[in-house]
Image (cartoon, rainbow, N blue to C red; front, side, top):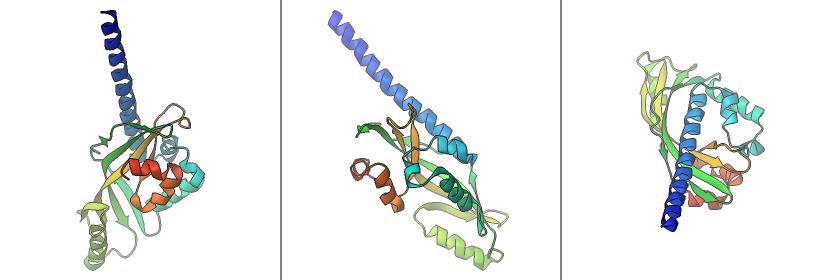
Length: 193
């Protein structure tokens, strides 16, 4: 009887730890998403997997991000939508806990140049519509910008470098080589990326 009780407690403890880990992953994912929506680069970087900064220093990455979201050609604003997070099970590999997180995001791109005629707007809308990353591409009602939705992938990582917290990197197949240097080919393959 004592053995059965001990086994039951052990089983409950294992479920509790697993639940807390998934709960903390979900909580930290939401915080990262809110920081991204607010374009709070310092907060974003506090949620970023530290090994990313070995490939590009934080200040350089901040400059690149700022230039991407506001440059001489366009300004991008993120739109508030339900991200509909989908969390893969947490896997342990190479001393890391890892989960792939799929979600929706949306943005409006306000063009600063060559966007005053219907023909110019059609060229940009058609180019984005033909890009597999984007869906729901359309002009905003003022015809000053283009709204687009994206299916995005983020990887949550918990290891000895993350200070006891989940940290994240966004994943795009076009930059797989960089991610291979951050994680490993083996990990990416096991994650199906």
